[in-house]
Image 1 (tube, helix red, strand yellow):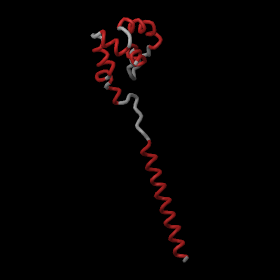
Image 2 (cartoon, helix red, strand yellow; image 1 turned 180 degrees about the vertical axis):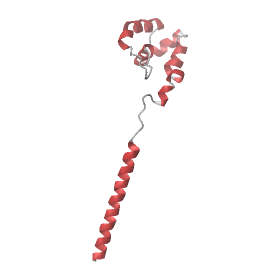
Image 3 (cartoon, helix red, strand yellow; image 1 turned 90 degrees about the vertical axis):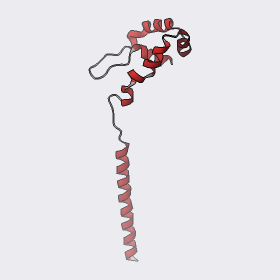
Length: 108
């Protein structure tokens, strides 16, 4: 009887060790790499919606109006009015999102 109790406490101890090891492993897996600029966003200028689609829409007034629900002239007027308010400072670390792209995202 005494031997079984000792065996039970040993198995409990082993289970606790396994749970602790599992918790440690899960904690380590949860840590994500933090990027200054995520790799997906580095391709924004060559593959992003604004730089590809919106640039094409500028040449077709009807499609531009369907996309933004305003004419190109209205878009430009709004941009002119708010450009200084939404402009970001360029740093040596990264290039900011342009004011027209900011406006386009807001309108969509």
